[in-house]
Image (cartoon, rainbow, N blue to C red):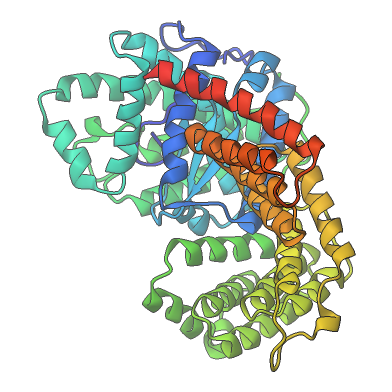
Length: 519
């Protein structure tokens, strides 16, 4: 189920004039969403799942224009738009892959983010997976194999994802007695892959991304999986040959653009400073072994960097800084970060990313005051609509609110005043009102409530973390704890918050009952 190596799954009819592949679908949008929720619930528990606010903000900057383009083109009708999750889940996996799940959950491996060299290449991957969803491929697969219950299909999908981490599992499945059935499913998937390529191509170019990004991405997939064009059992692969897909996309680039909707001026499919830095971040996060982290400082040697383009220099210095932070080698991190800031000072997006990385460095050194100074200075003031900036600011204020002064640490006069912590709490409250399923935001809000002595609100926010991760039994347990706290008149209890807890408890109880009926 993926962009490069496994069977992609996903979803809605298009108005592009392309033939409707498959046999139609009998699966309702609600049933598909529930199946996706079931799978996503397990992925949230996977230790490889990572919610990195900085990297996710970069990915969302590509994903949201694609969603807008799909709506403009009519690929994403309102009923599909409102019924599905449209969530991207990052996986701390070094393999080059992405996949679509039922209900519009998208999986994106950090290994893939780490190898792309332009926004346009990443856009081609996301547009491809988005098109699996809008074409309702998973539902069509389910209809084709109507004898399989939804829960069984969910287990099969989770099994495929697990097999991606252990190729021997996949080989064993294909070698079993169900090989003929698996082959039939793979053949069906190849048609879906071609359809997703072609629909995704139009969506990506409509969003203003360079069409050449599709071709260069396929070239990377060939390098990432030597098996692709080696002639070894191609009938066992779920995707068409990368060379075939490259030729198809290249021919579409060269065709006249007659009959299509107007598009913004396309980009040039070139590497940019901020993209190089985010690819480096993905590589560091996907491989945090000590030896791998130490390699970054070697690559950042000035003599070696001088031979690289400026964009690659920025990426290497960013990776070296983050790696040094992970190793807690703060002296080296400060040195690399200073070089990075100097390299990207003329590029506003990259300079902002360097500023955020500097704040991470200060936080790692328990210097919340220094992190706040970095976030509040520069050409661009603090942006409370930025998830990454909001979270870093909250972490800095929390650090200061709990800091015990010591030698070299901030003094009590430098500690975050109550008014500042209150402002961050308000900003987080606004954020979760607009993004109620943001688990990390609820976690930070729980911590700020606790720092303010609002225990009931803190317990409720912890319950909302569980709701966001679709773990309704755990959420119910916490909501009931909050109810008990309110009944006993515990610290931070007020009638308004207690009424919210009661309402949310009843709602989650209904979700738990629904979940039990699905089993």
